[in-house]
Image 1 (cartoon, rainbow over the protein chains, first blue to last red):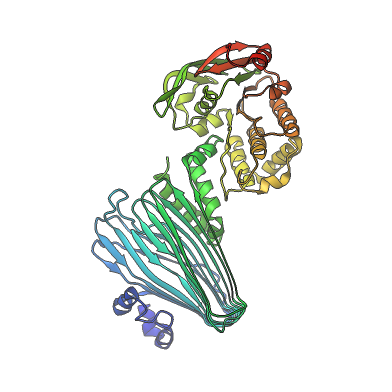
Image 2 (cartoon, rainbow over the protein chains, first blue to last red):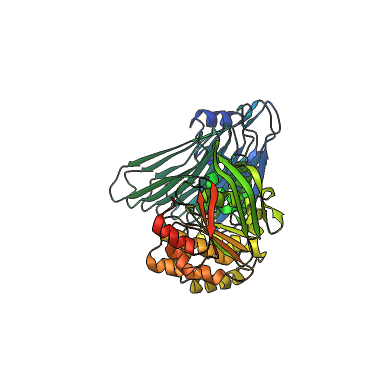
Length: 329
Length: 239
């Protein structure tokens, strides 16, 4: 990003802060005031980026905050897929991660943004230490038939507040949000999305899978808002929660606002339990405990996992299985 | 094949099995009958390695192995199949994918094609509605469908010893005949079966060599098929 500011100041000036204004929220303001680097992706008109762009973030310092900034611009008829992975070592202090991510998709452009987040979640017994993950991620589907898809696997951090959102300004633009959030130990995750329909005949899909174990809290919080001019808007939302053990909590807070007629909004939700009985049943047919947990969880999350690029999907499944093994059996 | 000696088992502090002895040889069919709460299902679950029961005393040897040393999946791989009285539902997990996983675990065969051939053969032999394969594992299945799915899994695994806990409950007359025929076709000189049941009808189709009566956590009577007739006439009281 610092390089982009030197080499392409005009583009950076035009777009930086255009989707997430500096006064958007406390942590966005903090990020806007102090950020020094991050990633910048510019995809020229008609270019289909042939590789998955991959980044990795790590917080190494004991007493630190991380404030990276990501800006991705896809010009008309271009496509790009961007992945990020996050880890941090264990400390008994808390570190702040307050990133801002802005995506802009022009006419018929497509941006796919995937995250596998495994920040240190703090001590599972005492809750001491861990990352506070307060991130503002938002994309603008500026052009007609543009598309932005967020896919996230949130498996770490002591506290997560994160709502990757889509502003569907262009007519017939498409927003998608696929999320698996796994909380264990004393973790708290409050995550979801905002789909703001402003263009005509816009479509959004939300699939959220929350798995809570131990004494953790896992919340889906989402907004589907259809503006007064956004006739023909359609949304489908599915929120499923899986509970592991008797001491965890899961909540679902869907907000729906419709300011026009001729729109179609669907919401489905379910809650299930991952039980030791299920694991025993699968084990009694010859699967190891790890294979049994992995099968049950991958069945639960399959609609989200299949949205991830292939190698990432395998890694994400392994991560979820390892995280859960300590919580069951 | 299976030798249970003086088995004592506690669940939540209460003794459920109080000295069970049982010897099953290759090619034999054993039936265990008995009133509710006698410990029949507990015995089946202990054999499968259910983690919430405490084995206080006694030994179980299966095919020259100490069964208590094996994890549930190792018992399965050693050739022991325990069909559940209440098969668990796993929403989201496709039945076909699950069957492929257990096929891989037992045969070491990774080929999808070989699995599909083996599965298609069983589905035909057991007269199973193929649509059942593409539903989630036992999710929303009727009691009878769950039991048929247990026997399908048994067919795919092809164990040495099958312990079937009330596999006949929840089946209508036609389904019972079909399941009984599926169990019969499993039986060969090197295979053994323990049938846990409340009813004579399954035993009319799959004739047991030995019938045991279990009461209060012990086997209190052992005989041949004539014992079934005696129980039908007099109930469990005289045993």
